[in-house]
Image 1 (cartoon, rainbow, N blue to C red):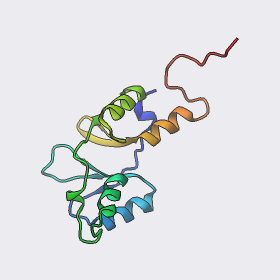
Image 2 (image 1 turned 45 degrees about the vertical axis):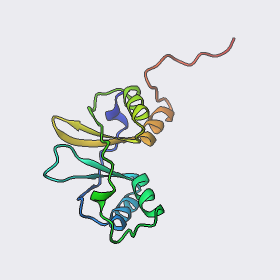
Image 3 (image 1 turned 135 degrees about the horizontal axis):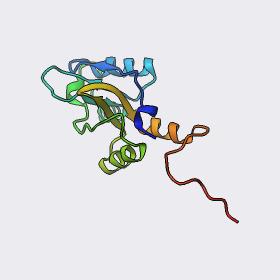
Image 4 (image 1 turned 90 degrees about the horizontal axis):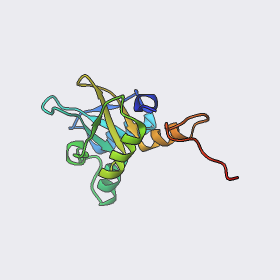
Length: 137
């Protein structure tokens, strides 16, 4: 199964100058765990995750004065929509991340999260393309 099947095409795009509170509010409104942070000076978008927010606020920082640019994830992995779910899961696990930015022809087309992978692999009739389950004799 390719990641384009399971990725979210609805992407929240935010700027690096947004406060953590505003970013968290927008993520909460959409029910998502990560926002894409874009700036014209960066060749690749960055990501602000729930974990980034939790780390900042949990350490006592003020979400109204702290900015996204100071807390976003620098470890951004981009993937092609035709990557397999297995390849995506392997890369995410190996690098300790939970989100991949999906780009096609240099353009952002979606985000794939570990949650998306689990949903795709556990939906009725979904398969990861691996061998069928074998029943014990």
